Length: 334
Image 1 (cartoon, one colour):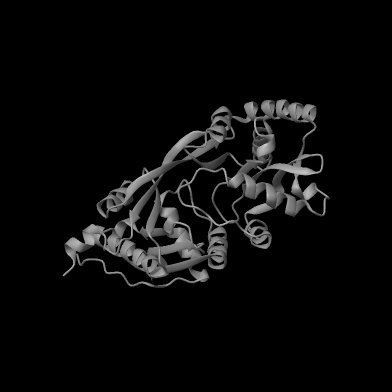
Image 2: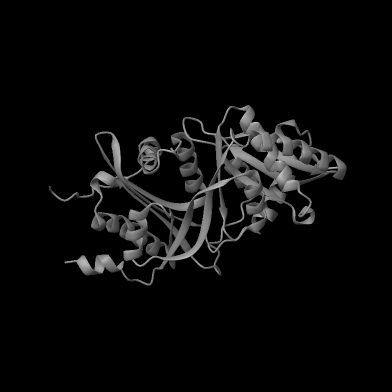
């Protein structure tokens, strides 16, 4: 059999469906929604610096690579994300390395100091290839799933308990679609920006302006305002939890849960998550997934109580972009 040779071209927004199909082949239990992927590409193009290439044959993507990075501040460490995908029936370690090299070369030209790849640990082929290319583990996240059928009784019983606790504390929970405060979005923006600063991370992210943040969340086709829960204490919005719901295919995910620092330890994040899970049950979903950093014990405690089960760790792998090519490429270059 002749060795597979890449034929990459720039990927456009119209390629989102075939790349979503390629991603879905990696885990049919977690299919990628093409409408949502297109939105993420649009937001990345607007808020970050991006490069995407695809190899499409007979209307299907067989290979894809992307590289992105934040719009850096002068004094911060410069990380860039690499995203190589290669269909299993054409898999070749050397071809996969070419995808990584393309992403790294672009990032290096942008001034990045470190390349970052995030891969589920059970995707052994990718992990092994990245290891051979000099990528090493920096941190881990957890992808977990909640069985809404098996845990229905627990969720609905605990929901009532949470509602009683919130009422006793004078905290009101409702979707933002039911909120009439003309400043609700700006208040929510401030609370989310504050809470995300406490999410453990090695790779920093840029704080979004109000208009950027509003487009990022509320232009998202997977986000509905009637599923975007907020917690109010008096005039302040002190917490939020939101589901993203698939448009074409896939399963719902908890897109974000967070509270203001001033109210932590009072069960508000827990109450918000139970509201979203009850809503997912009412909408007919049978499972929900979430990803959390392994160094975030407070949210992991809530997930464990709810009954989330680990799907697989997501491993964050780093490689210094010191001007060298990946080791395997150095060894095989003519």
